[in-house]
Length: 380
Image 1 (spheres, rainbow, N blue to C red):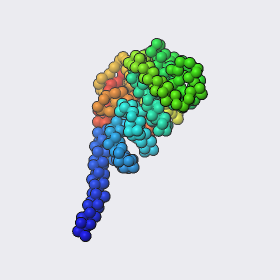
Image 2 (cartoon, one colour):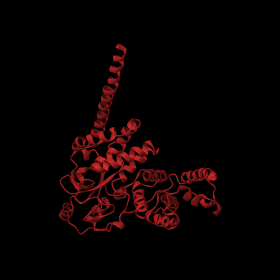
Image 3 (tube, rainbow, N blue to C red):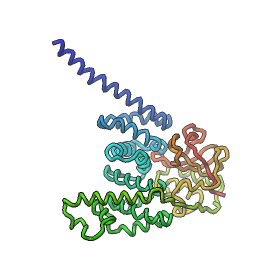
Image 4 (cartoon, one colour):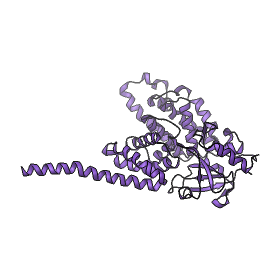
């Protein structure tokens, strides 16, 4: 009887004490990462959200979930993802990292795309693979962002999008021009545009004769051929590793706006929601901000955020003037450019978040001050 009681006590201890300790440790880790990456209001509002999401996950994913949280929180907090987007973006990131073997850098970059695209699990893995290949080739994330937007808007299947990336890389390495390369790729991939079948697409890219078309191939031979195609695909991307450096120039004529005009234009647009490559009343992004204050068509403006600061760089916050572009990193550790804003006056600037749309912030705030990289004067 005593032995039975001891077993019962131990069982209760394992059931109650260990999970409680695990939850306390989990809450401590989540709180620490929120403190590291987010502002104070977000730290208080997001802890229950992330705590609940992680607790719903299988035990086997806990450590990966914490790792992914450290990777994705800078973007989630800087752009202030609403709760529904946090849930979607974070769950997909954990799935991609844990089940899809995506690299940490890929998961981090994919979290940036989630504010403007909607993907399922398999799509997330497929586009993550495309992103890894293009990044390894030297393509900047802003161009990849446009590549992914275009392929989704053109109704490409995930395998078709792989073919699109293949032809894009070939042309981009030659021309160093994003739009020309994307147009070439769209023209070359019409036959496999809607394809989700990787065997079919890889065969189109690397098969030697029409006799290898899927309808002629026995099921027993497909596995062998698939492996050969995958090896050829790997060799293709090795060939283009660090070969693609796209370049753009910023060409903005002198704006007719006064400083007061710029401040009024931006203030009148406060709370306008995020919209990719838009400066309309219902959608705005970083490029749209520049378009507004410079009277330049969005199509004429660079994709790469750092292109805006290729000259006339301003390293000191105190030297900024109304209309200057300000560049930020969502993370304080890697200092990689993640966001563009426009300086207004009195240390204030505007940029586009997901939850609040176009919002006003202050460079004296330590959160933004610590993430400020540089400014530049694009209006002369």
